[in-house]
Image (cartoon, rainbow, N blue to C red; front, side, top):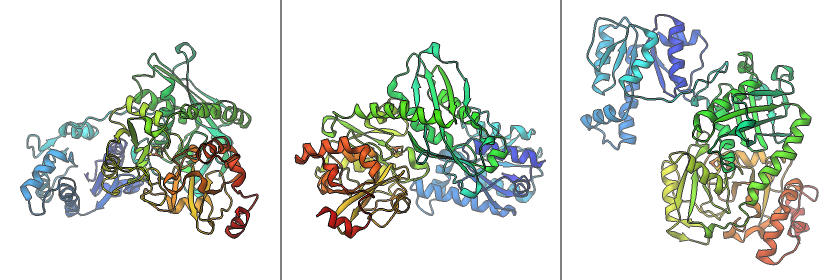
Length: 557
Ligand code: SF4
């Protein structure tokens, strides 16, 4: 946008309109002062970039276009015509230039038009069909620009008091900026979806049970449970976890809201600015309702949201409804093995936070968030064949010991945009799978015992690795391979494929007590089947025994 707009309000409205459509906006000239004056935040993450007040700053934007052709289009440096052609056909950029258009602006505009980027202006003096488009009504700049580049965007209006756009995904809300927090690792929280009969659901009904945000102390930690009730002729229970996993990206699109985790291990922060703009619990319901109805309209005819902030109800729902539901889903996988299926699935839902992270989901290794099993990934693919989960064949094994396949490597290379070369499915030391930040647990090799220690997100204490879960997370996440450390789901601990390349579950020497109790049944069963050992978890230390590595060795021996 080359400014200034006729009024600050018109300039801000135009910028925010593009932002809500996920379009990157670069600003040149007086529009920058208008945006500043209105207090609109700008950054790369928010996709609003002030470039410079002088018109010659346009050159920096053109430079991005030139580099785009070289980086993504493999156009050689110096191949000018090829570069222009690439931009014309592949880069859907355009310019909005507010009157008055000076001769200097015209000369820059001519250069931009050579790239195939049309200029839309409210200046009446010039007109070049399809290239210099006159739109006297500034409110119509957005629609005219999208039409000029044949850009079609499917947008659902979300009726909340703050912006809703993918550009807010990845926004971090610091403790000092937060109005309230909902923390599933310390309190009872969960976000289950439940399928109901059509007659049981009143479409778009949003119910709040308990206190609203304005009755919660500033900076406090609270419980929250939101139950999404859905009904539809083609709805299947298999789709429930797919919807649940999408809540993460839906809620992160809210300006000033941060959501991490899944199932009953969620954490949500709402910023003071967002609260002051009028955001309340019912708005969480509005977001979930509108997005589920929009994205899954093929299977969801009716949808209602119940939001519980009442502590007793949250505890009841988590323990009596959600956990049994999650356990039931996990049990379906109990009889399946990686060898019995013809394909695995990739998942890139977490690339908003970790751009190079790719999970490969198999029957015996669920996604590291613990919320995407092989069945869930399959259902996600069936609901949206172009979506975040894709089929991965496993026809070209390279090394079955560590679970490495040429087909899997090809997918990982492509989906990580070349950041990752190869991954193994069953090793923590050789080409381990990457971790985003959503892991339920982190395991790490403990050098004194040469065993492996595991910490889960809920465990806040020290581990024999000399680090807490948070400290381990800061070195394991980010979509990079860190041999010796790996993020994973809780369910994976009892899998026969857990660290198979390094000897399997027998290498586990330390677990937090609560986690040990949660995984005992599966883990003991696996140890019995693999090694003939009874009550294997009795041989694993926990924090009540020691967190010191030397004492751990003494206890083990
Ligand atoms: S952690 Fe993995 S499986 Fe889970 S949502 Fe993220 S990418 Fe998908």
